Image 1: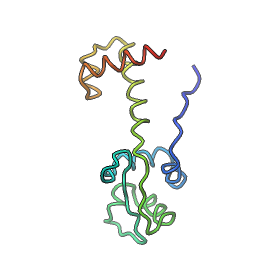
Image 2 (image 1 turned 30 degrees about the vertical axis):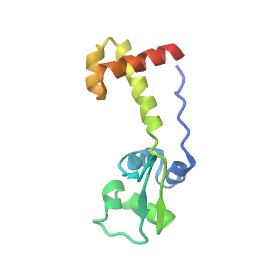
Image 3 (image 1 turned 90 degrees about the vertical axis):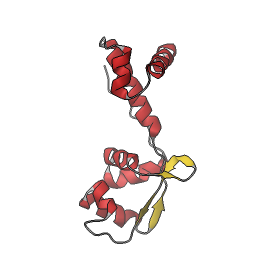
Length: 129
């Protein structure tokens, strides 16, 4: 089987990925708080200077935090939360576990969803195949 298609990143996330890499950008965004009432966005202020004990260093590590400061100094970033990428991956994993013979209740426990929701995801995925 060929390589899976990699989900295209929203522009607001792509600009971060260009600085620290795709995987690190997605991991970083996953740790950020929701931006007010816009649940599809997260929010982070990138200061002009950081110290070793700054939250950005905690989230990214020193080198990547410095790259972010260099690229986005003094800016408030509001990238997409990219939940659609997580959901797509989760749904593929649900189908993989089901195809390997795992019971619905075990899958639900593993992905932290109700058995009803897992059955719903399976039905939707099978219906689109």
